[in-house]
Image (cartoon, rainbow, N blue to C red):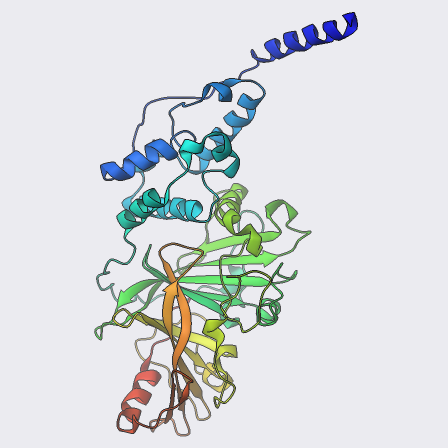
Length: 445
């Protein structure tokens, strides 16, 4: 018993001594707080400031070593990613983008950290509070028309510099097949998500839990612009992001290599290799989907619910062509009908398209044998990203087959609910054919 008592006394003394091993947590008043309505600031103050601010707010039990060490590290990590005490110093667009990411982290259950909520239940964001944040962000406000596309000199894609983490740029990205597309109301951009052949076949077979090594995904973004006819179409090219799967090669970054190249000159985004922490942190909420936000347009059933977009892939086999395997050319959204459309072209049509450097003022001249397909879907909210919409059930498929480039193509239309051929619009066939042929390819660097 004497030995046991000595051990207890030694343990108490060691525990007491540990309390002096307490590295500091910097604390200071807000220097540039976010400017937002009082109800929004209250939610952020109550639920987020404990970790994501320059203020030091520790419960009494957080200050006991060794728990203090873990709490301190969590706070420093949280501040480095998002600090509401200084967020107001960033441009307005960057502030909104940060809030959208925060809302998505909350919506997907990644923030506040589940283990933090277990011992700090008051930090849990309620459904009412989340609805307040979403109402403030209001992603689907009308966007004014954008400026016309500027002419530019295409960059030599094989000369583009690798990202700062060593991930090389892949010049073949523009020729990959469509995985999905998104309409981002949070930042008024469109995105094509394309995949190389390994990724495309994986998506079509449902082999995405996880994605196989060698899969490459390209997310191409354009600013949205409103056309004179009221449709919203891709405008200025913004960036291309690449993800390359290699479970062993990229073990330290969740099994993926990450890269981003911005602007028509495709300048690497990072300033050091540490930029990749932005990627992995942002994609952490979808780790159950192998860190991929995109729901591939696929008829295959994946392992988890909401891992593939089956409804959007519901094109019947009786169509004269299956365009989802063709190269996407452009897209647009009709805000009145809340529908989205993608223009696809067969291999012959591809020959009329520049793989990169497209900034012509005139539509392509498609050669004989070209087939264009305009697939229109209803839209639904993206379950993985608040402020985005993705294709839902197909509404129509329009085909234009060109036999003579100097004459309008042969037009056929298939419409819902069963995408049966519609012969009732014969009087507008020439007009629709001309519309489809005149759609401008999305600008690429």
